[in-house]
Length: 252
Image 1 (spheres, rainbow, N blue to C red):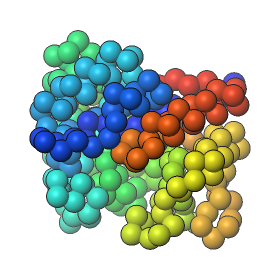
Image 2: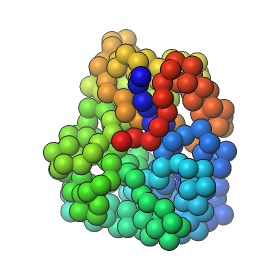
Image 3: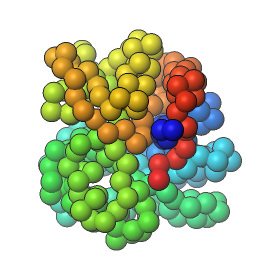
Image 4: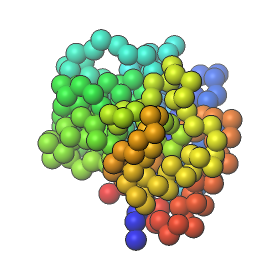
């Protein structure tokens, strides 16, 4: 039987600003990617989100992003591989301190937003991020876009990797995600998104925006937690996976 991880980006509130429904969505996912303070999150949010994840039995991962609070880490920045290494080490370390102080153990790392997409395409950035993860803790799992340079870099470094697919994003023929600037970047219909998820898991294929099928590896499925119907969407995807005989468990 096929196993799959359901992951969600959490802890993305900041100060007086509240983003997402972390407490509501945690029961439906198996892995939590927690923001580390650069693109979102602050020390209090990080500690509280770690505690919530531990209480729910959800696997915890660091979600390092670019230092861009105003742009939520979704704007490309011209960073060097050395800078990518440093900011990844810094953010993993910050979150890991909260995880350890709360009695937990970090399991994985998933870059956020523009950093994630840049590393998916640029080998030097991907290698720097993989090296950062390896040097902090070689036991951590590196999450990356299925078929991307980041997955390749993690495997080359000797890390365990998890090929990630997206429930509510559309795909380009080269396997990249459709840029959010385009009107067809997101799948807003829940039934269509769920059908895409089940097909990626069961068949290893996804339909691109040009109508062609693309082979894809799916170890973990990303569910975004900041939409207006995020909790219900997560519940429906979990239910659909269980009905299809798919076993839900953290990435291995």
